[in-house]
Structures are given as structure tokens and as C-alpha cells.
Image (cartoon, rainbow, N blue to C red; front, side):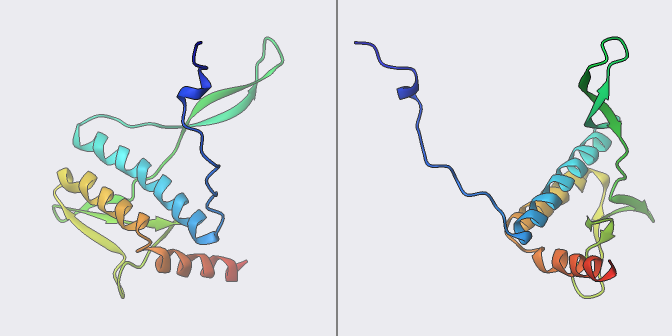
Length: 144
């Protein structure tokens, strides 16, 4: 008797989706930080970085809709000033207040950028930036 192919897989119940507003904001920030990490890594390695997004476009020959990759403009959250690099963690294009009156992280050499961004990703995963994200989100909803 042969074993079925499906019996070789581990079946589990479907995990719950993160549907709380805080979890959605956290996931959005982590996705943006991942792009910043890729940009910083490319900068350190002396490479160019291009971010792509998928877009539906009509094919001129067939007239059918098809998904194509197009370059997406992404601004870096890090910059050099006075011989040092700094990182601003941004949400909804607003810098987050990381501590009272401080909106930037001093990185130092550009070689440290990927490590610092990864640290911010880890902190976001541990809910350490939830208050700062909520503060920006509240300002955005009040302004509507």
C-alpha cells in the first residue's frame, strides 16, 4: 500500500490574521523598513537599487490586461550630514518620534545602516514603536 502525497504534509488549522489596526500599521512599517534595508545594503555594497511594483496594463497587441513590473520611486529614510549617517523612521511620510523630541537615529558610518535598520525592524516586531505609530495615525485621522 502506498502512502498518499498529502499525508506527507503537516495539516494545521488556519492561523488567525492580524486584523487589529495596530498589527496592520506594524506590518506596513515593517514592509517599508525591509525596502529601506535593501536600499541600505545596496548602498554599502556600492550597487544601485530599484524597487518595483506590479501594475495591471493593457497589452497593445492582444488588448488583454496583464500584470507588469514597473519601477517605483522610493526615497531613502537615511542621509549623511557632517560625516555621519542618520536614519529617520517614517510612517505615512512623517518621521516617528522615537523618544521625547528625537526623530532621528545617529548611525555613524554607512556600513552600520543595515544593522541599525534590522534593529528597528526587530523593535517594531516587539511592538516597541506602536505608540509612535499610533500618535502619527491619530494626527492623520484628525486632519481628515
